[in-house]
Length: 511
Ligand code: SF4
Ligand code: SF4
Image 1 (tube, rainbow, N blue to C red):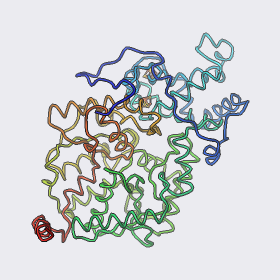
Image 2: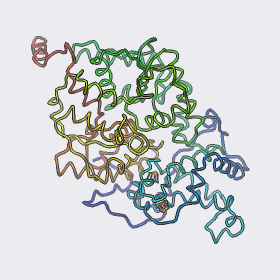
Image 3: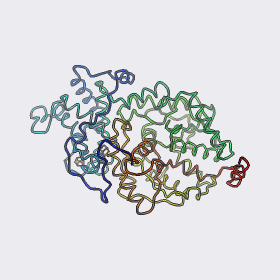
Image 4: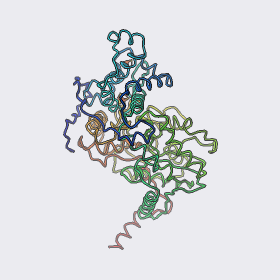
């Protein structure tokens, strides 16, 4: 079990609502961005003397621009339904991690400057001046929200704390108080094309290496093409897929599926990143700039379709915003959705019978599936309601014999966040990440004990990275996390693929 310099929550039989521990996470503050990282995104480098005035102006601007924000500020009736729904509150016991308390950090400032009662009788209506102390709380606790939207599912008024948290982060960016992790990454995408800062030639080498690996394993020349003009499909995938496990096993799977489907496809060195951290900092302008890279790549390469790889928030940005941010997409083939998810494509091929599947190749595993927040609660997939829940499960069940769902109140729409989403996947927040993962770890433990589950599949780069890092704190092994297309890859028998007998013979020959 991984060692921690903080208390790792115990996985009890039932998920208990903890007794509050005020200030339990007040010490945890993610690193602030250096001036050059803020400036690269069009924000002031650092806080100025009149930051308070700037922040109130920015809030006023956002209240006008996003009417939903004003509705959220005005409509909470303090019913308490959301208080025990946040994984960070359940894992940390800090009452400021209750969704309603997180909202109130903004609401009390809103009331002070934007309501009659708050201007004249602030104490009576719970309004507060925007002081340095309040700003410090904003910085800490709006960076302890993964924008997962679980709380909004249970709010009778549909108040979306994720939207409030995004707005708070944008206000902070607009006064020069950005967080290092997200802002540095967005800057890398602008300069180089992906979160990792992997330049085109390095990417090309990596993909050639993958082709060699797949050829060595199967004897089939599966291509992982880059910048191929005139290809039909542009695959936009998270850069984690290019090298890290279990992500890269998923990319291997996408390539095998495209190969067997007989379609022409390519990736792009210009849009070599599906992730869009502009969403995490609430900045539509930065989200738009990143999305425009996908448009440029599609136009330059002359593709007819765009498919997104396994990435939760990237799919949310693509599904919900791509048309507004980078459309119109009238130059693409209207017979296909824009964009399409790789799982829709793969399920389509499975249903057409194009893929030769041997499910027994995954018989060494008993699988469960983690619904990623952004996919589950902010998008759909395919053309039927609930496709975002059913399509991943249908693909897993088509390639694996052993599948079990985790308890119903922890999956689909009620899924618990992995604990690392929303721009929090940074080591300076490890304590929060480990504690916030507790509800998911508890659900995983229950199916491990009851049904012998050995592996948990995911379709989000952040979930996979987060889980591989935090599950050892709960006594699991990091290789228990798998990509869904890794399972597809294992089971897919390519045309002309070496049989196991041939492999055994060649090993004997070599000996
Ligand atoms: S959006 Fe998710 S992380 Fe944020 S307060 Fe709600 S439940 Fe917690
Ligand atoms: S569930 Fe909605 S209305 Fe009730 S306290 Fe939470 S945010 Fe307010």
